[in-house]
Amino acid sequence: MNPESQTPWPGWSSQKTLLLPLSPDRWAPPTDAVEIDGLHFAPKRELHVTLVGRRIGQALHAGLGERRVRSKAVREAFCALDWRFTRTHGLHRLQKREQMGHGAGRCIGSIVELIEMPALAVFYRTIGELLGREVPVPPAHVTLYTAGRAKGIGVPDAATLRRLSQRELSTVEVATASVPADAPSGRSRSRRDLHGGADARA
Image (cartoon, rainbow, N blue to C red; front, side, top):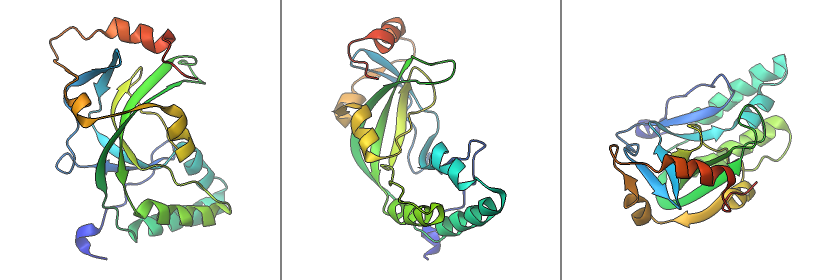
């Protein structure tokens, strides 16, 4: 592999997720909050691509002996691939209700940009072989803004993206929706809309 395309192994998180961090030099995080559809979205301070979500990550780590073999195989597969990507500037506003934990029933939102990352499909073929079943390839995306909580919304497959997407956004719309740090954010209105507005979906 071309050394310029070699991406360092990021390691598993404590939640057994695999996140590919994006350098600010490669993709600078947004700086200002935005108001979209009457909702207040805070900018993400660090950007990443979720390569393996918690559910699949925990499945890969199940069983002591199998866990070691799978973890080694996943790392080898990752290191053999070219993780370069292309931005599409295709933006979606996502929204859902939390189902568990202290925030159960609360509506949360995010704004994500889809990216083209060919290595992901190849990577998931290896994951499917390790788990002995077909595993859907998640839509490669980067979360740029969140509402209701700082953490983004998991998108494990294309069907989930279609279900959670409230609508597509244009880059111009988002760029012109910035809220200056010293301006009233309309946060109270945003909370009301997120928790009980007609736009919320389960």
